[in-house]
Length: 152
Image 1: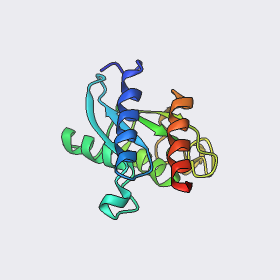
Image 2 (image 1 turned 90 degrees about the horizontal axis):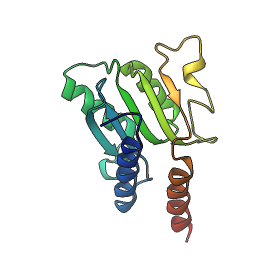
Image 3 (image 1 turned 90 degrees about the vertical axis):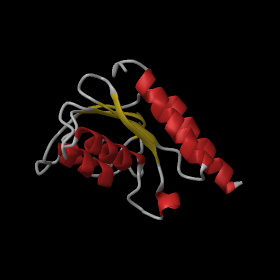
């Protein structure tokens, strides 16, 4: 799978839609290996797992690390539909992900371009390359639709 194509974000969006169908906040993530091969994919499972840390990014990175047999994802790309929160940004740093591509920006809860801007902090362990706004409109519309439906 070519990490520069739309295919990885499409897979992440598909995972987000599956999460929404389970009643989860619609966020999806995929991890690509250094060669662009799909290593893992996940959607949010916070409600299903009764685990506040079961964000799509964490689930996908954990699965990719298990698949590779290493705690680090050197040279890997994380593709996620929403700007990672501070918790996920810290995990991305600890997993040593090489590149992060995300869809919608999150001014309220983001930790990359908003909020603490974790990767810009002098104390940040590892700073991945970041690319935001990938299919932003589609990712944001999915989130808006989910929350509008909740509000009835």
